[in-house]
Image: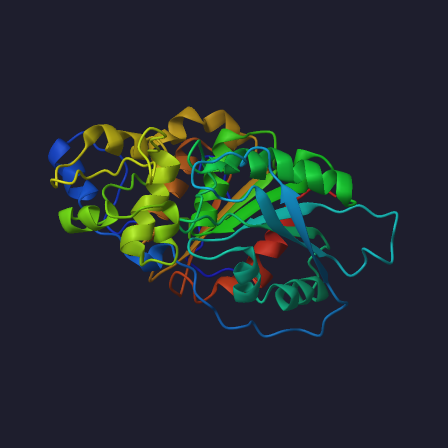
Length: 373
């Protein structure tokens, strides 16, 4: 099932093009911080539907709206009433005494949960996975979007606490509403791109909530640097009158605003409530760059080893044409250095073109074989 260059399971063993982990040489670090960021490293695109086996039964997808106390009151004005889509397996209605593991699936930047389902061809992909032997489970698709294009599943007064929403409020709702198996060993967390970052971040910071992690082309593993910001772009951003002015804008505006709202928020700086890593006169802001680096998994992994050891399995994948390959490889090697069980697959593809088929044939079987039933 896996390509020959998959790293084997073993114990012991970019969002930013050119970004890397923290290095002692200042000149090297500054060169990394000034690197430009391709929008393709975080923006999800439509991938072709996978070829399907004959479905064993229909998956039923319900839309729920969950009020999040953790997100309420954020300064962007993002609604705390979050759309959540719940995919129920074919046997759910026929076997009322049966309980199921749950996988929480986080979408990428510039889309919402509904678009994520479309791009995954989710119903067909899930049905085909079950038809070919993947044990049945419940799959939950929460909405992590906001006015700047994405929350990064982080926590700040500006964005609201999406981290707590995903790690605490959402599982609590699912466990009291559906026939889930309400224990960490039966919960999985996965995501693509920004969602892969969210799975890594929450997995490190919220141990004891999930039993296994899968990161699909995870963005933002390394410190983000300036994300290609120029003096001209900063000046244009300074003309925005409200967060809503950023809705639907190109990545060169939305990307730095979204990550700044998540990682370097400034509640005392209306109307956008962010500190950008470049000043309006074009100077780098080391204090803001440090805040952004402090949210990079590769920069903080050494402080979260105990949390990472708690997972039954950690999967990572990335297309060989994706600029994220170096950072994903470095994450894998870091986990290996600490003897944390993990698997990396670098497969033929780019950031988005195999996501749907891999969700069906790799990610869902991974959780089917890993989560406690």
